[in-house]
Image 1: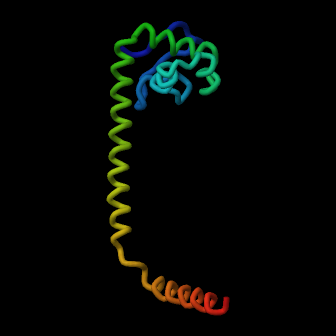
Image 2 (image 1 turned 30 degrees about the vertical axis):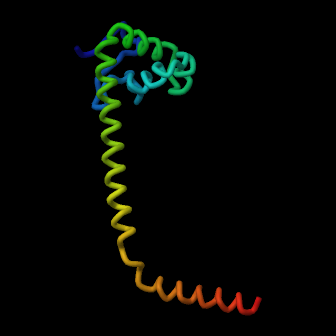
Image 3 (image 1 turned 120 degrees about the vertical axis):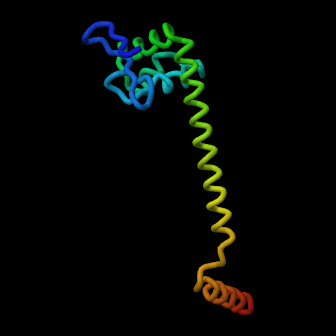
Length: 126
């Protein structure tokens, strides 16, 4: 589908490796969709992402004009984000399980013994 060009100095929506992006920014239409879906006013979204009036309007009218396509891609992006999150949760779970199963580091044993001794001494003195 390529560029959606209005006129030369108008902001456009371009496709980057991040997906449909507002030209000249790192903001994708999916970023905007998150807030649209949550019913935030466009003025709020514009300020949040530091967009110009033209940029937010371009994004909104592109979304309007290509609702089905943008929605479909947005769902994919959400699903991918969920899968990535799930992947890291799993990896972290395995990592923490490994760490928990590890014997205490050598040296910590002696340290704990010393702490217990001191605690016992204090309790005797008290």
